[in-house]
Length: 498
Image (tube, rainbow, N blue to C red; front, side):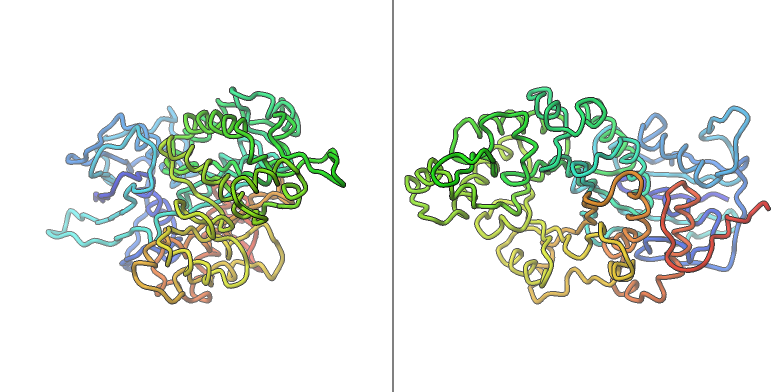
């Protein structure tokens, strides 16, 4: 028997479903494919009689780094207890059961992009049949399906980030939003401004991300078909920046004299933009993705308001006492810098009201769909995060809460709804570090993953989804992901072999 899969360039999706089908029933597939036909027939897979191979008409052939690595990885996932004599997967041997993989074009050495195809087809070819029937036809509902990791409030070791990328791929997330720096610490090691991490990180050696470590994360993510979107949030959330870069933050005043404290980045000095240009030039050369997140949220204007130099600049620019205009002035300059570097700027929704050249991430609670409607009406693209803040734990924040989200349930035209490019799960780090990251994320994040991937009509029932997610959680455990339980119960693998 041979089975063949034809796909676009995101190669890892080729093999994800077969790894779920290989040893389990079809009912356990998560996220649910767009079209899935199943039968009562089951085939036992033998590792000594199973193989992956490139289709003869595939644009990519043996030597394709992404596919070669994926073949070996998924062979191990399907046959977890199998170790061959030489521990090397031999491709293209004549074996009774071969999965042939064909791709439309060769993207083997490039990075995943916003327009990368994730379409996946699976059609069985039986030797005793003269026709073939497509059993799986799959593609994502939304192109942007992200997870935000906050590495400023608690430092996450590189291995914890790589393990998260593993788990992300199993749920078909395709963007790691790396909120790498913030007020508490600046762990990113800049070669242009080394004092930022040497003075701004929790520890200048153990709690930093070197350039080589950042490249390691990006390279690992590439093999999984995951983009890495860096965020350097400013002008607020920058206290740690000031420790290693003098004259960057705004001096605060009390009673006409400096108070000794500092506020957001100083938006009135030319040196500010010279610094930001050099920093973003470095960041853009290190992170290959076309997006860069500029933050822009929660800016406290009180320090700007207290500073006489800032107030004088406001009068000169005819801003009056409207400090949102000053923030808009700052963000305009930063967007100009990143645009010159051929980057698409993403900002938090706080910036939307006074900036029209960005992609907006909606994060505030309340009527978040009202905000989505307002942003899309202005013709801007939207990433939805509000309903998926998973850093909160407890029974009120169970998986069903994150599953029962309808991203397009707002009054608006079809053109507006096309501007909602997806959403992301946010794992802020106030109470999360490497000790509880995985169980806090999984399997609750998988609920959001299915909402962003699958057809909404087929996945509207929490009750019907529950047994599939339970099975998927057990699969995550077998793959080494410490996913927390959904309810009372057990996984079958706990007693197999006893």
